[in-house]
Length: 426
Image (cartoon, rainbow, N blue to C red; front, side, top):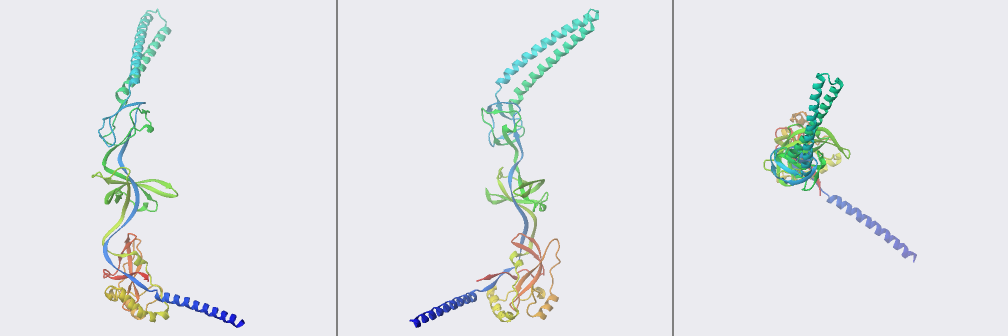
């Protein structure tokens, strides 16, 4: 019985060892199965531009709100949405019944004041005659003169009141268009009561001309330094997804807007709308053209970020042959790719000196270098595969970037060269 237990324990141990060995074997097979190879790209010529992108809202240029200059009830409306109106055209009639009553009362007040003035004037003239004959004291004459002035003032006040009512009847009760343009909005109905001179009772919103629009764009404080007056702008709207519209910066407003700790500045962009496709309130995606170049050498940004992983010295010799086969199969046409670097090609790479040290030093001495960096450009390395199947670098200077591709400046014969973009693991 004891023998059987011992045998069972041994068997379990052996089984555990076999399982561990199997797992290690599978892991080793997985590591061997995982292969890496370079993905190549070609240096080509093309156009590139650097832009600042933001969003904004289309607005009509020269919008005017029509208000009422008197309190009253709307009796008739002559204009509606999208109507074209001319300056001085009648838009609304207000009810004038109360005004007409007030006009009659004012006319009566004027007649009464006129009669009082005439009577007071007659008394004054009579008193002046008596005063000339020393039959009336100076005090009584002065009192009569004062009463005449009061009567005249009351007459003038009554006439002014009548004139005000006449103006309201002839002008304010008839609300006219202050400009020639188009009706964007109507905020009044027949029977509404409007209050004199308050924005709460805006009657109409008019725009001078929709053939010219403006975009109010919120630009982040990080990008505002790239925006200048007169700068070219392109924009799109969702309603016409396939169309691109153009404009230019008219104004950069200096008052900031802060929302959720994000500071933005409002930029006003003029936009042509001769085709009348653009409407007020549309959301526009705006690209401010900061810099653009044509027919320049371009590479993907990934190629500028690539750097080969430094291998251990004892692995270099054994891996070189396999790399050559790997690169040959990866390159179009089964070739070795770059061959030599341009003009002899520099041989330096980050982290150490590549094989063939003496040969590469000679190449470096004769290789044309990239122009010196200026205007914020950076020196970068592009990598290709030399005749030994090893990565080798070409120094270049970067220029304009659009976030995906970057302009490069370097040796004259870069166009059409194939360079390493990234490493792919399979």
